[in-house]
Image 1 (tube, rainbow, N blue to C red):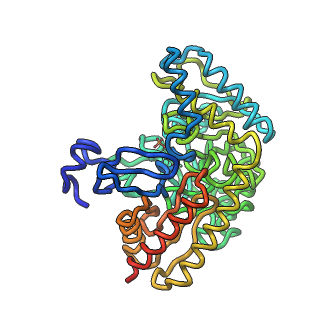
Image 2: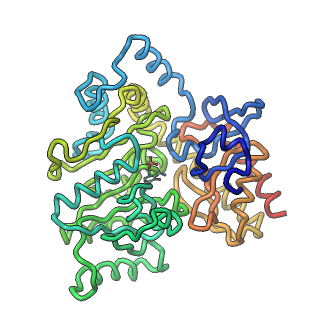
Image 3: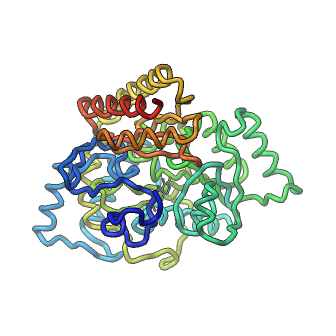
Length: 420
Ligand code: PMP
């Protein structure tokens, strides 16, 4: 769809057509995994605000806590002053998330969005190591500010900045060269070769599953190897868990099954629990080196998001949500395998893990056609990958069987129509 083709976007999306999404309707109401537009048409949400709505829309408990907080004139904006809710959120985050996982981090509030967390991580790694460059990976995505773009693979998105971005090296992500040994040997060789033109970097930054870049999921062994490469050379490992974190892959942090311990972790999107903006940067205590004022901002920490985010942490007090995500992920996997067998016209290959799976289609335009047909039949779904070649199943992690079944059945219809 071309810029401003439809008046609807001018009026209801943004007056400058900067977003990519082109659903030709106006949304109004949402509950759980369902969204309704102004005409009352219902959609199953297989998109979850790109990971900002992992717990679905308008979760009852979070809503109740938020309403109570507002009714009691709880402080909404405290800038970076101490607040009761902030303290309680931090305490609960340590109790429910970090301590049971034996993770030792200090929590920083870098600003309202994921990009802010990435920026703070890049700045901190450079400050701590005294080195300048950062290694990022093919097809990675880390945000839209210039620092975050400099470690983003997508040429179209980088191009938007209009200037060449330096001080970053792109290395092959897992499976880029179809040979893990080759990829990691290459990385080691180029780092250790004084004549390679690659200076020893401050940090590696990576997503364990590349959300925008096409749902490329790193293998656990690759992540372990990368961690070792970093440790052996005094390089900090930054895991950007903005999209793959907060339960998306079946564990709270996406890197848990690999058993690695990043030096810095970026979190945002669903950490506030209710679609409210909140970002955290988790910093190993050894690297707590920002001086006051070196990284600040007006909206660092949002008291309303602390209220809902705190409520969301209750989902992680036991492993029932985690188990449910893992069980349903297996069903999604089986469904996608079945689709690839039934519809060879997709020329598909499976991508991702957990609640971020999809199919990379070998035929140009098919993934977009699937997403378009999904919309027509009542499922909101997005595409991913450099050429939008992947259709991406991204339902709320709290979805029930009934909604999941309905969404999958609509998706099958959409595939059938798209390949027709
Ligand atoms: N990192 C990753 C992995 C992301 O997926 C995103 C957003 N899609 C960002 C960073 C940037 O987050 P935000 O849009 O909240 O600034």
